[in-house]
Amino acid sequence: MDYSLNFKVNEKIYLRDPEGTELGRQIVKNAIDLIYRLGFEHFTFKKLAKEMNTTEASIYRYFENKHRMLLYILNWYWSYMEYLVVFQLQPLANSKSKLERLIELLTHPLPESEDHFDYNKNILHQIVISESSKVYLVKEVKEINENAVFKPYKDLCARISEIIQSHNPAYAYPHSLSSTLIETAHSQLFFSQHLPKLTDAGTENKTAFVERFLTDLLFKSLQP
Amino acid sequence: MDYSLNFKVNEKIYLRDPEGTELGRQIVKNAIDLIYRLGFEHFTFKKLAKEMNTTEASIYRYFENKHRMLLYILNWYWSYMEYLVVFQLQPLANSKSKLERLIELLTHPLPESEDHFDYNKNILHQIVISESSKVYLVKEVKEINENAVFKPYKDLCARISEIIQSHNPAYAYPHSLSSTLIETAHSQLFFSQHLPKLTDAGTENKTAFVERFLTDLLFKSLQP
DNA sequence: TTATTAATAATAGTATTACTATTAATCAAA
DNA sequence: TTTGATTAATAGTAATACTATTATTAATAA
Image 1 (cartoon, rainbow over the protein chains, first blue to last red):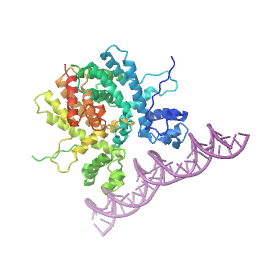
Image 2 (image 1 turned 30 degrees about the vertical axis):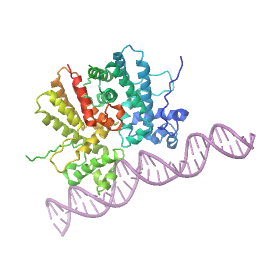
Image 3 (image 1 turned 90 degrees about the vertical axis):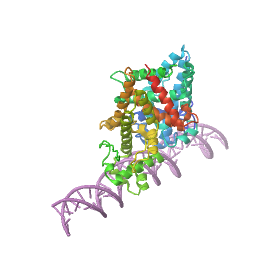
Image 4 (image 1 turned 135 degrees about the vertical axis):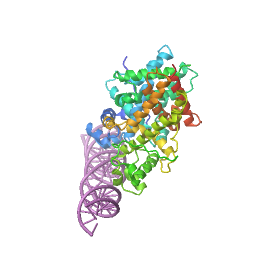
């Protein structure tokens, strides 16, 4: 079976669909690498242009600014994650195994697809951990939110809520618990890597640690 | 009883102690207001200087850059919070009421002190909610961390851990649960204010909602 | 095939931001 | 009252974020 996965990202996010041209695809691919290397604050369109031998103005034809570019990347990530939640968890026998697998998905890089033109999933995961909150922790969040650009995050959250509710229909905070799982996966992975005193991660594998912590947190929260 | 509270902030954070001069104190006070009004990304030293009728260069004599200034403000906040955790929770009868009061502290603005020269606590709390993660979610986190500038956060986290451990000595993740409580208080307050679909907050008071959610999360996690 | 139009990218800017070197003013000690 | 030291203000520069215009290429019609 040969198929390719494509997530249509809300067209309000870009000026010109980067999926539509080779240059557009290269811009996003290289942006992911460069945001990872420099961090979002030091990342600029000029540096990206130099990196890939094009011009700043060409990049501005695709994205209004670097914030929108990051939003595009995260929309893609959230959409892919929702896809995985829907199709990878469905076949599982019960809500318990679904939730266990969910935490595995949230704490690991996205699984590699067959697609040979593809983003580097490990690097993408690191960006999600370090940079994702910067797309909504801004003064303009209200106006940005008006074009439904956070819909993939909300949809992902709603999907997880469904599983939580099927596990324990009496639980009162399914959406908050979902967003807390997502955010805590990121913050605990970041802390265990960079500020380990804020965690209980020892010398062991950080991902495995966060997985254990979140599994404990989730199932205890859902105890009747 | 007349006393004044002073938290000595790590001197690696500033170039010149803003507590030492009237101008320094005004800079920090006005910075809190302006960061709140503009958001950290749009906040600049030039705008702050104009706001308070001084010069950009004068501000640069106190702080290397705006990131250090935010770090200073957050160090003050974390130190104050640790103080409250130590002295306000100590007299309480048992670990259960300590933890309940802790969540109240984390979800509400800091209590007002007698000090008539003082920061606006409501605005400070909003900054903590929206901007605090930006001080560590940067590429330079390792070098920044080397001067112990996150110590107040780690200390606060350690204090909370102690209470958690006294409540349930068998619990395996006291530090991670502490940092998760702090971070989740911020993210859920932010979401309930701006992206409510990521939470289960209804029309009710957002602070009360987050308080209920965190209380549920905490005590269920600590069930034996 | 050539001329016309449309799409795209590159050049060359500007305004703002982040930061610094230098100068001016103020104050305290000798 | 002079010297020295501390402080703030002036006047910059380099980098960043963004845009208007021009040049180039590709597509289509005559």
